[in-house]
Image (cartoon, rainbow, N blue to C red; front, side):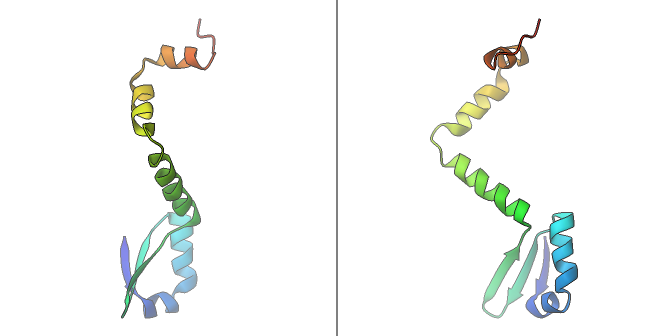
Amino acid sequence: MRHITASTARKNFDNLLDAVVELGESVSIATDNGAAILVSQEEWSGLLETLYLQSIPDMAASIKEARDAPATERLEDIGWDIS
């Protein structure tokens, strides 16, 4: 993650936005009162989805169980004919 000052962010705002959106680069922008993080909408949506999924009881265990199941078992569970 790149760290810059607010005045640097203001001077290069268009380039900064392009880097965040196109390259997926997060940027920490420091002010006298603290700092803020600039992330792309795609990254933000992914973070929110991850937080939501982690808030569901037993979701992590269910994902791990599915991941560890043999591939043939996973395909059968969704009704695909694997023969």
